[in-house]
Each structure stands twice: as structure tokens, then as C-alpha cells.
Image (cartoon, rainbow, N blue to C red):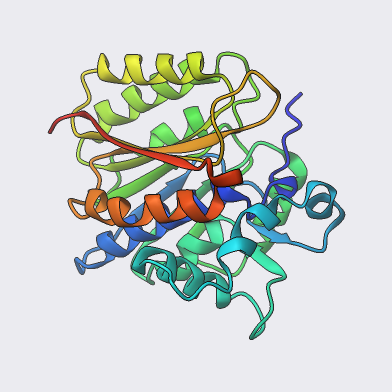
Length: 280
């Protein structure tokens, strides 16, 4: 039984990083006046509040968005991110956090289509309520890994697929690789973003090794850590793997990731990584 609920982690350092990247990729795709198909395989409930009992339990947002919220020395990519989050909050307040579904809806246009998958019954119900009046969007209580394949290739022939699982299933690292390979076979020109946590570096090495051997080209890796790898419980870093990313993304992250590592790192132990895993 899957039990992960993102409400406990909304707005943490991994969310900040993930959504900074997501916004930059969507903004780049929007520059061309042609429709986009957006697919989110693990959408969650899409909407979070920091005064909820879940968010208050570990208060992870305090080491995430709260640390960058009032800064005025921010890189351009972080400014884009904060500007969007402020659209969901009252002036001067930080109470509400949009998940990736609401971020995508806010950025995309009436000509675009959005598809969201969420297996958890309660979260899928909340997500459906959020999008019930949005004719561009469809929400499915289904397995995003397998069911989303039927959408590929999209009629737009342009699109972004976000794969953002919880990795609570033991073989999830293998599943994401198999899914990416199947998706890429159907839609090789699409852009893909895969989020991953760092809780056991051996699993991340497996992910990188199998991606390099997958035959997929043009793969970039970006990682933000707030403390060194550890055998203790908990996430020390998280990453985004980008397939067919905007040509501008690497330069953006070279400016942004060191700043995030400095601001969000614990005891000045923040670190980051930027790597072209597979060339074009």
C-alpha cells in the first residue's frame, strides 16, 4: 500500500530546486508559439498549506522556500520561481505552496493540454477538484508510469513529461528507467524531467549507469545537496535529470545551483553538481 504524502515535505529544499528547474523548462518551451502537451506522472494533490498539520510536523519548508523568500540577492531563475509562488499568496505572506500541477497550469496557455496522474485516492480527489473547471486539463487516478504511455507521441509533437515519484517502492529506480526508455521510444523529441532523491548513493549510481547505457541521447544531470551523503535516515540531496533540455538550462543552473547550495546548505556544507551524462 502506497502511503507517501507530499504535504509533509512541500516547500522543502528539494521542492525549491525541482520547481526552479520546471519553471525554466516551461518558460523556454513557451517561447515558441505552438501548443505543448504537459504530462505529470506523479502529480500529488497539487495544493499545500504551511499551516496544515502535515506541513507543521517536520516544518521542512523552513529549510526550503522560507530561506529564500525574503532574499533580495537572488539569481534570475530563483526570481522567476518566487514570483510565481507569490501569485498564490497574499502580499507579504507565505502560507500556500502550489505543487507542480498548479505551477504548470499557471504558466501554460489555452492552446496547451495538461495531463495529471495520481494513484492515491484522496490526493487524486483533491487534484480533480482543483482542475474540474479547467478544460485544458485531465486528471486520472491511475498509474502514471504505464497509463501515460498511451498519450505518446502527443498530437502537438511538442511536450514535457515530469516524472516525480516518491521512490517508496523498492524497484522504483528500475521502473523509472524502463518507463523513460518506453516513453523515449515513442516520443524521442520530447523533453523529460526526472526527479530523484539521494538517500542511498548506490541507488543513484545505478540510475546514472543505466541511463548512460539506455541509448537515450542528450541527458543532463543537476543535483543540489544540503549536507554530505550519509548512512543515516533522511534525504541529503536531490536531483533533476533532464532529457532534451533547453540549450539554456545548463548556463542557468551554473548561475543558480551554487547560490542555492550556499543558501540552503546546512552548516555551510551545501554542494551541487552539473554534468552532461550523455551527449547529444
